[in-house]
Length: 297
Length: 80
Image (cartoon, rainbow over all chains, first blue to last red; front, top):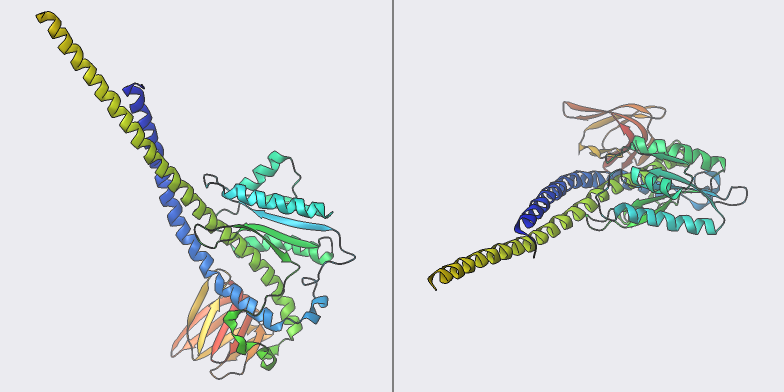
């Protein structure tokens, strides 16, 4: 049986660890709240942009806009894969899941004979691919958990240029979709070429085709040309914001589990300690009694 | 009429208005209640939303302005 002194030392150590995990859990909870608010606040813009594009879009226009052009002859078999991970760890399998999704997509694309440029956002993804020894087209670790539309613009700008120039046949993003704090599946989204948004249910059936009655200034063609880049940029922005929120959700869950198991460990350790302490007392009493009896006898 | 000014990050302004002046791509446009359905690109400048004697000013750049029925949506890539 373990010595009481040894047990006390371990209890202290587990208690200290539990204090840290509990604090991290609370910090993650409050950051999650704010990150979640940002995800919700970003929805009206995305919805408004998608509604207008859906109204203006016509399939016959696709050929005329470089951003809508489906890959065909004359484009390189090259795809840019943007992987968004977090800068910090201690969030369970969050980054591992994202990296696995990216590696699967990478394998699928390479099987089809496509050259893949990896663009990494976040320290964890960068660290993994450095370890795996794979060449990376770009990486940045300065975005943190408060991404802005400007960050998205910086990321997508060069990729959109390459896409328009025809040196890329597509741009895909691997990110954590934020369905809820506990459901954040890693997702691959193709943001270029643009898939025209479907007329959303939110815009209602009565608005379908209503754009024909609009006064358009300038022409539908020019409006589309200006708004498409904003739409692409916004998709990336949303991927960044959702991943940031998902990270805090994952960390909260991981830290809650850690705090709970520290509690379970403490229960067991305290029970063992008490048993050892009682055994020691019982032994001392029986030694004293035995000694006294020996003196009387 | 109802006005919403939306940026990628959040809804910046939401409320009723008597008149709006906004910077379109080719110059200022004024919107009064009862305006015909209208869609235009935004340039760079300040949106002025007037209600009674109060005026709210918001700087915008890029995006679009949409008038549909009695609601005006100003969707801007950057709001300052």
